[in-house]
Length: 238
Length: 197
Length: 93
Ligand SMILES: Cc1cc2nc3c(=O)[nH]c(=O)nc-3n(C[C@H](O)[C@H](O)[C@H](O)COP(=O)(O)OP(=O)(O)OC[C@H]3O[C@@H](n4cnc5c(N)ncnc54)[C@H](O)[C@@H]3O)c2cc1C
Ligand SMILES: [Zn+2]
Image 1: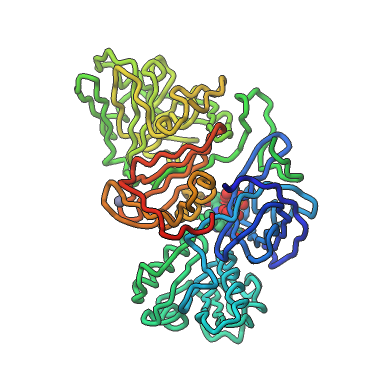
Image 2: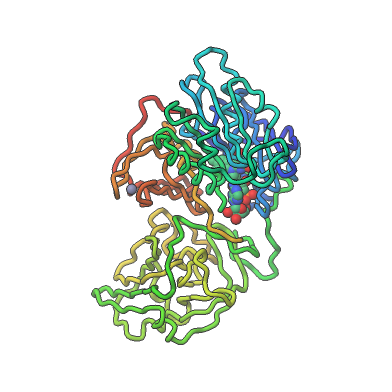
């Protein structure tokens, strides 16, 4: 039975100009698997409540919840989490949640991760979980990550040197000088060039704003990937 | 008792006038949906009223525009706890649709394009208490807010004001609509906080 | 620009339905009563309306399941599902 636990912010760390990592201590929280999320419930002093979902950025340690939140301008909850919350603040946490969009260390075969914006968070958790697997059994991971500019990338240094993972950043607004790909949205060409080929039999995880996920999943299917092997996590938005 | 989160306020202005219990004011007009937004063009829009005897009365867009419209300024209250004051609408009082309808029914169910339904006692739709509206704040009603035509029953929680209206059916017995089947109150008066059945 | 809230994946049903079933609902396979499509609940398309989450069939958009978190207990309507099948090994939950 998964009920609401009381969590306390113990640490915050800026990630980009609009995003940060929050670490919460949550007594009773245990057994999380990479790809899962938590529901956070915030209550204002007058009783007003809001519930939002956030993916776990890292799994492993029990009673600790690490999330990475990108600010949605004019949002109700994300600006609070990115700019206002500080160590000592309390909020309610429900989870870990969801057994569908997950990767477990025992899962065999290659894995293709496709992220738009903050959709990289649960995929980073999967890559981090993969890196802790020491046996030779674990398949290779590839990550295609779409971000506006280099400055908007989450965990770029770490994801550039994670064991078993090859990361390709795709810039939609402005690409660094060294990048040969012109800035732009994810295309069929990107999928065919940087992702595993369909016959590699990779499991595919797609995550990000709803519009990105729907576009990316359609491109993957067009490029020949088996629908049955594609799992999606839509974050919402227009 | 829930844990209070310091510094979290949501984004809510303060109220000068009383609001129904448990409600919070908003300046926004939150867009909430239970499914894809139906794509209905005003020129092809139609609605019907079907009586308990199976008699149908129909209106198309031109027919609706030909009825006398009113400007309406009301407060609206959503069961998800936001209220919005002084919203401006333009539409036809439901009474105007009933001039030729003969019925002994006491209950109505509003039906939407997309399959949504909600039940309202017929008396609550009449006597100038409900409108079939097609303008909001001086503009044609946007599809996101139920355009081209929605029901407006401002004295009940807003889920009763069916968006994308395509008809009313009249019944001798109260028949629960979409949310009412899932435990929301059959009547939904915000001032007596009738949220749940 | 104002836009309609976009739908999410069935995965987000895990929170509202936590504690309702012993299995994690997102890995339960369901059959749409309307069109017969068979899929895990995690693959359904969810409109998380604050009055309740509405899970729709990924194939025909018919309503499969409605979850309302009432103060006196979570209430689930499953009229749109012909059947549910538990996975052999249930996921974490
Ligand atoms: C399973 C799941 C996991 C998630 N994990 C993460 C995560 O790890 N990190 C993270 O930053 N977010 C994540 N999200 C999104 C998060 O739950 C919130 O939707 C987001 O933080 C916006 O909340 P808000 O209250 O600030 O905005 P709201 O007040 O809810 O919305 C304000 C406006 O922004 C739009 N909007 C809502 N969500 C988004 C979005 N995601 N992108 C763009 N526009 C949006 C709304 O339609 C509305 O117009 C996840 C969502 C789900 C369903
Ligand atoms: Zn179906």
